Amino acid sequence: MSTCTTLSRELTEPLAATAATATTWVLVEQAGPWGAKALTESHLDPELGRTLDRAAAGTGVRIALIRRPGRHADLRPEALRQVIVAHTRPGASWVRRMSVADPAELRALDFTALGAGVHGGLGSEHVGDPIALVCTNGRRDQCCAVLGRPLAAELASAGHAEVWEVTHLGGHRFSPTMLVLPFGYAYGRLSGAAAKEVLTATANGHTVPEWSRGRSCWERPGQAAEQAVRGLTGETGAEELTLVQRAGGEGRWAVVVTHRDGRRWRVSVVAGVSEPPRPESCGKAPGVPVRMDVVSVEAF
Image 1 (cartoon, rainbow, N blue to C red):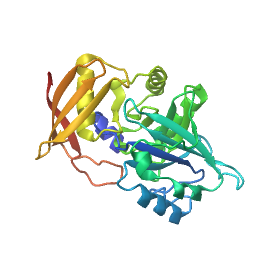
Image 2 (tube, one colour):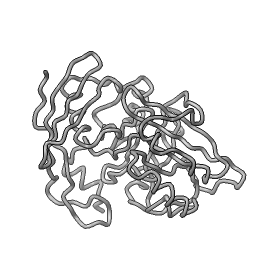
Image 3 (tube, rainbow, N blue to C red):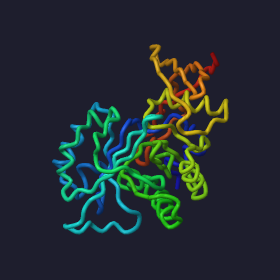
């Protein structure tokens, strides 16, 4: 049976510049079943889900639900829920975590500050292994469940990272997909061996461009520019590159990528489409996904 994932592979659709955009992630533990729109279609109070979604709108914060790999029984009523908050800009990335008795406590979060990278002493600093978030929400796309759940289980048993299933990372056709903290790089089309390589690299402060979809703090043109510079230079240090993106109109962008050592590149990016039409998610009508094409890379 053909799926959105098999079609994307067969058509050699590029992984680069397809990561969901967020400067900060707020991840809320919610066991039990998830619907396609998990914030309002799970055992989390739907009104709370709508409230949090509205509060995060326009702040750069993306909210997702997480649960441990394996069976998805509900949490006991008295159980504390884990909340992970991660800001992912280079040179300013951090991960904070806390436990809440009632998820309604999250109404008090200052989403504007969190999106800007200000945690204000929230919870405690995460220390230890990378955090792997594997998309597994089959109600949103069957590929995420069929391919994502076995990967999450394999990684959890291997002990390479702290592993969670997550509701949505975008790009179902690139399943299995994974976001890794603290740096916020998204990856796609992962095998178990590739995912373990990514987690080992992350623990050592590096990214793996081969399976990278981009760093989620950058908009898609910036993701494309960063990937192009990494391809040119072979740089894998996660925190070595920063960028400034400027729109040029009519689907064009000029992006300046700066290395920590002072080197700079001017990258020209244009929006294109991936032909021929293909479903961006299983069950959807075929479409032509927007892609980011790098036209030129110039050192200056």
